[in-house]
Length: 241
Image (cartoon, rainbow, N blue to C red; front, side, top):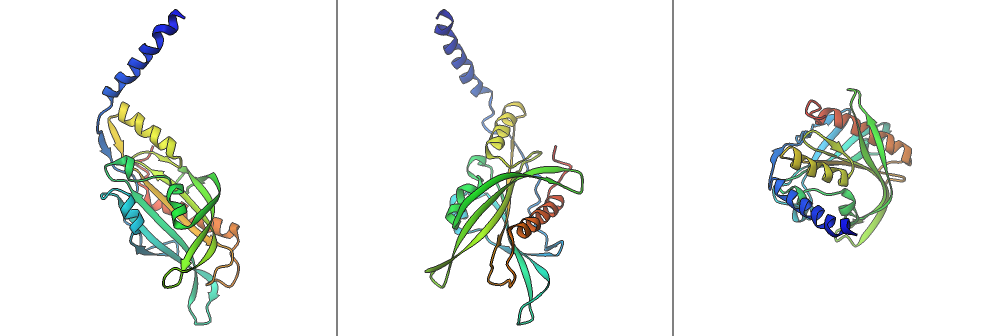
């Protein structure tokens, strides 16, 4: 009882005093991601699109965006009009501003507002041709998309999404781990890492513009190949531990 009478105040005092050791704002470590998207990559063509009004209204003004609709012709598939029929992947790269706490977040937070009902989540290890590796989060969902001039109708598609975070010299697919890294870096290194999150998604199943039904396995394989190539090309691996 004698120990318990004074140990709690001592521990509390030491913990609170550590606040004064934390820099109010550390040096900024720029993310290792390259925000300039390529025009083409392994047969995929990139069409840049602006961020949504919801993204602009939710995130801080100095948040940066690189978003694109990515298309790749499906071998041997041509529409009755004679056009090549493509696969489609939706790519989003969001780079935090200097207010790191309010610039990026887990995609799970905003996906429901985009019509997604998330049904599954797991970690997937990616091994790259350059010998590096990282984990990404894989989400399965059903997305409801509004159509028509006024959005009065809707259709639903099965969807797969992969995402991960890229800091100055770290990569993580876990928001809590990323937060702990930030706390440790500010305390021990006096540095704030500027993080970006990369997400890429693809619909599968019966899609209006593709005659043959796209299986989940096909979509998954194509997304993983896309993300491996993107990671090799768009991350400065000399900067990453």
